[in-house]
Amino acid sequence: VEELVKLCDKSKDGDLQLKEFQTCFKAVLKSCIKEAEKAADEAQEAEARGAQARVETEKKVREAAAAAA
Image (cartoon, rainbow, N blue to C red):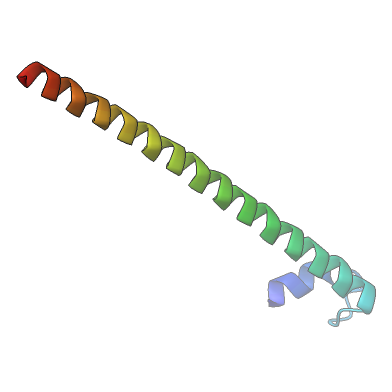
């Protein structure tokens, strides 16, 4: 938090003025949204890979069953 305050404290007085705080808070929120979107995209991709793997496994099971019949 101290590092964040130092980065946002444009007046270098050790305190965040309202505008400095608003700018900083907005940047933090945007960063959180970006990370959440990235995590959601990764989860969606993982789900798609899992679904594809299930389809391939089911196909192999059907093929093995047909070959055994």
